[in-house]
Length: 229
Image (cartoon, rainbow, N blue to C red; front, side):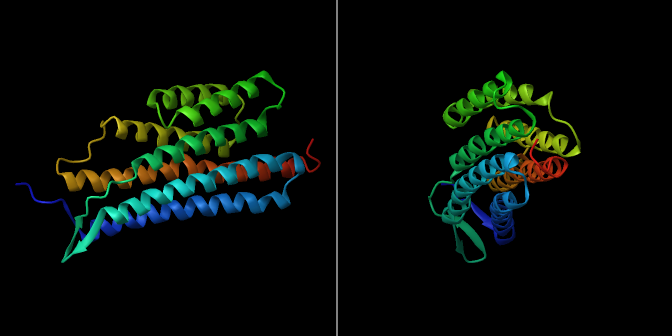
C-alpha cells in the first residue's frame, strides 16, 4: 500500500508564500489602476477601469487556488499530509482566461480607434476567448495567437514590449505545464511543488507585469495628450 503524499514544511510554505504573493500583486495592480483614473485624461480612463475590474475578478479566482492549496494539506507532525481535498487548478485557468483577453483589449483601447475594424475584431476574439477558453484549451491557444497577431503591429515602446513579452512567456510556459511538457521531477511531491511555483510565476508574468505596463503606458500617453486628443 502506497504511503500518503507528504510535503516538508519548507516546501509547503514556499508554495503558500508564492500563491499569496501572486494574489496580493494582482490586487495591488488592480487597485493602482483604478486609483490612477483620477490623474489621466477622460479618454484614457476606460482601459484602466476595465483592466482593474477584470484583474480584481481574476484575483478572486486566484484566491481559490490559494484556499485550495491550504485545504489540500494539513500539518501532521513535522510534515504536511494530504487531506483528500482537490487543488483548484481550474480557478487559475479562469483567471487567465479573464485577465489576458481584457489586457489585450485595454492595449487596443490605447492604440486603436474604437470604430476601426481591427479593434472590433480584437474585441470579438477576446470575448470568445474569455467565454470559451476555460472549457476548451484549443480556444485559448487560438485566442492568444489571434490577439497577439492583431495587436502586435500597433504596440510601440519599451512598456508595450515588456507587456507582450510577459504575456507570451507566461502563457506559453503555462500551456506547456498543462500538456505535461515541463521537466518538474520524478517524485510526486517534487512535481507538485515545482508545478505550483512555476504556474504562480507564470501568472505574475501574464497578468501582473502586463497590468503594470498598461498603467505606465496609459500615464505616459495621457501625459503627452492632456486633453485626450
